Length: 527
Image (tube, rainbow, N blue to C red; front, side):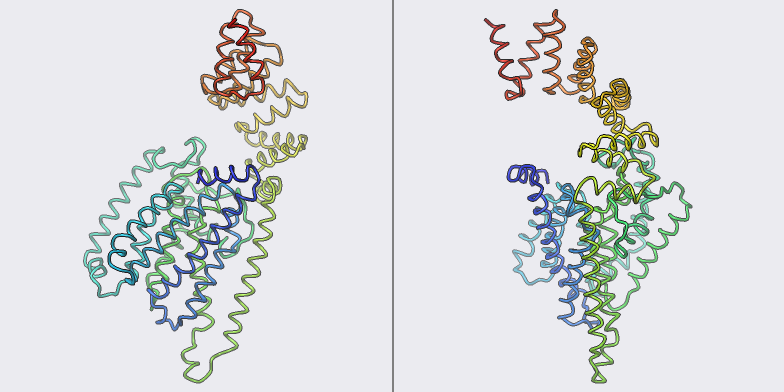
C-alpha cells in the first residue's frame, strides 16, 4: 500500500484527486470480481434446486455486487486515502478466491489447475497479507467453500461426520489454550498502538460480539448515523446482557445457516461474514473498538444473503404459478421496483455521506454531533479549525477536550502552541510542558521547547532540550541546526562544537534554508 501512495505522490503531489481515483478504481474492480464470484457460487451451490434460473443467478450476482459498490458503509474505505489498505487487500483476496473457484470447476487443464493456479493464489495471498492481515482468513474461506459444495456422500463430508467429536475436541483444546494466552499476556496479538492506549484484552473481546450484531449489522441493514469515530458501549463482564444477547444471536444465525434446506449458500456466506471480520473483531486487540472500514469485504456476505432472500421472497411460489400458466408478472414487477427503490435510497445516503467527507471540518463536526461524550472528535475538530486559521474556536474546543480528559497529549501540545502564537506565552509554555511530561520520548516536543526557550533567551535550557531531541532522533535536522545556532552565537565557549552540528545538519539536508550561509561559515573557519 505504501508503494501505491508513493506513486500517487510522485504523479499528483498533494492533489487528492489521484489518490481517490485509485481507491475508486479498485473498489469498482472488487465489485466486478464479486459479480463473477457470486455467479460461480450460485452454480456450485445448485441454486436451481431453489427454483432460481441461470438468468436470475446473474441478476442476483449483479444486484449483490451493486449493493457492495454503492452501500454507504463502504464510504470510509473508498474515500479515506488510508482506507486503501482495505480496498487493495480485498482485491488480492477476491482475486485469489476467484482463481480457487475456477480450479474447483475443473474446466482448466490439469497442469493449470494443480500448478499455475495454486502458485498464483499463493502470490496473491502473500501480496495481500503485506497490505493487510485479513488475508490470513483466505484459507479458511476456501476450505469452507469447498466443503459446502461437497455432496453429503463425498469422502470429505463422511470423514468430518465420522470424526466430528475428535475435531471438536481438538478445536476446543486449541481455543482454550489460545484464550488462556490472550487473557494472560496483554501484549500478545495487539494492533499497531501502545497497549496503554487500548481498552484492554478482556474488554475488547467482550465488546466485539455486540459490535458485530448491534453496530456493524445494524449499519448494513440500516445505514444511518455512520461516523468515523463511533461511541461504543464497553462490555467488561462475561454475564453482561449485551454480550450474552449478541453471543446468542450469533449462535442462532449460525444455527439457521446450518439447517437451511436445499442449498449450502446460506451457511457459506454467513461464514464469509464472520470469518473475514474475525481478525479485527475477536482476538487481535486494536485501539478502536469499531471502525466502518473493517467490515468492507466481510459485509458482502450479508449483501448477498439479503439479495437472495428478496429474490426468493418475491418468487417463492413461481413453480406452482407456472403449472397454472400464471407467470406472476405483478410479483416480478414488484421485485424490480423494490430493487430500484433500494438502489436509489442507498445511492442518496452514500452521496450524503460523501459530502461529510469533503473536509476535516465537516467530518469531525459530524463525529462530534453523533458522539458528544467522546473526547477525540473534539480534539480533531479543534485541529480542523486551527488548520482553517479559526484559532479562537480551536482553542475553545481544545480547552473542552482537556476539561474532559486532562491526559491528552495532543490537546495539551496543540493548545499550548496556539496559546504561544497568540501571545499567551506562559499559558502556552505550561501546556507544552505538560505535553512533554505526558510523552517525554517525542523528539519534536523537545525541539519545540528548545525553540521556545531560545525565543525567551534562556539558552542553557534551549541547549538541553535540543540535545534531548537529538538523543531521541539523531537525524533531526531542525534540532541540529538550532543547537548549532545556540552554541555558536549565544554559548560562546561551544563554538567548535557548534560547527560540528552545522556540518552534520548540512550533511543530512544540503538544501536547508540557511545552507549557503552555513557553507560560508564553515569555509571561513577552515581558512
